[in-house]
Length: 229
Image 1 (cartoon, helix red, strand yellow):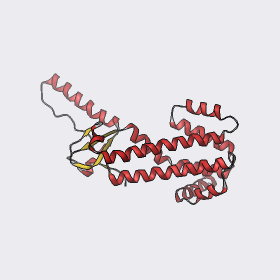
Image 2 (cartoon, one colour):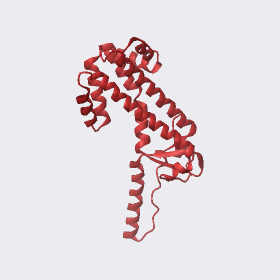
Image 3 (tube, one colour):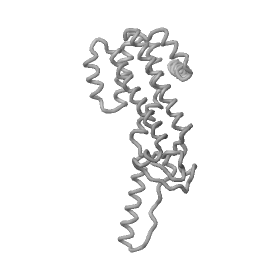
Image 4 (cartoon, helix red, strand yellow):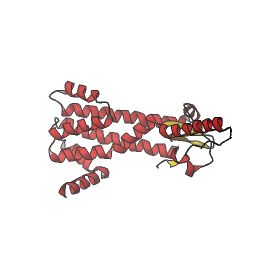
């Protein structure tokens, strides 16, 4: 269940952002922390997978990988290693796993880097907002205050844009955890397949297990269609 904007759930709700939200909603906080933990485990599994691909010199490979600061650069490094080691068919599966797990990666980054809050009117939910949108609100307040000082006229500052404040219910956070666990299983199966294939191919049993996943099979079909065009 995708989060809904606060403007749709309750446009008149009051809210506050900060660590107090976690104290106010401990059960929901557990779900957030679990999703973040699984996301970190997924990143760890990608690292192990790279080690299996770089059997000749894993120390150097991992040093280079860890030196890359952006997640996109790390993804590119893993893809380059996979393309150089795996046969074309297995590399396509590798690409599909990375694509199928990208929503989990985005969730982890969002949960880790955005601001969490709560609303007294929404006792079973937590709120999430991009810090950039919240900064825009405070800039608007400061600009209004400056104009009032200059003009001596009272003005009402713009309110926070509730379209950008996302509401996460318990059901929504549980769905996120399902998404994260499925992504972890896919990366683990891919890594296990490459490990058992000695870094050169994906093991037959785990290859078939991956292909039996609808997300992977659909992504692979689209990739093959694109390649044929």
